[in-house]
Image (cartoon, rainbow, N blue to C red; front, side, top):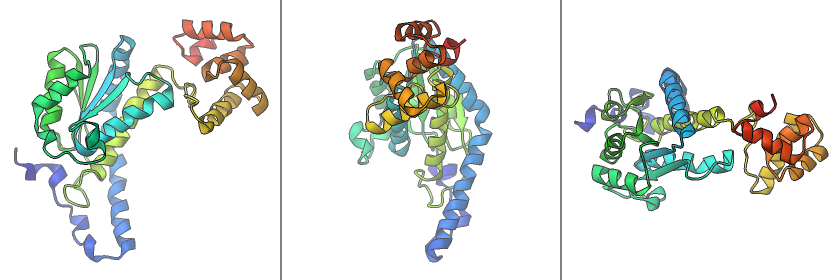
Length: 296
């Protein structure tokens, strides 16, 4: 493949003189280009929704979601995975990200690591990946060998594969079962895929993980009812969630939260149905920990 033919490597006419304009005009050019990202994601919504439903089906059968990428793509995958436990109080094993070059590549580029498909396959296996799991390969160019190698290995195991790329008709799209192509166009700084492509990737990852957690019952209404209260800010947020969901003042919400063992979902069911902690926990267990169902 000739890399110069990739959409992500093209020159952008809108920014051809960006080095000679005022700083304010520079910011306007950046902003105008960024506006194109959400529109590009909108065009991919059917595929993103398909991917969410497929992820949920696998997770309900004991599967997990893995992200694989290199450079910015890999960092964004690791970021999304790392934010799932504190946001939704799920095990860290449920959503995992890995990057070419290992964890040190999160802070410093590891040149050449992305060029080995064998390394991608080996690192996927090293994480205990299996046939029930889902692999989401992330590559703005859609041709990163490390990602393609991981995808090929995942498919050979019978696992489900997704791909996020920012180039049309990419190798990654051809290699996976559910391709997600988001095409925001050439970058303001030619080839700098940390910019529009990175923003597009982050938006899609937000949708995949958040959509899956909503479908799995970790959100009630639009409330983060499975939040993990690991610091003062999150304890305050948990209390406010109980206040809103139950319709009580802060003091009552704080007591419910403590009486529920600091579990927001349990506190909501206790408060809404006037139940003991044990009764609320039993209802939640029968409902698969989905608050809306436990309240029926």
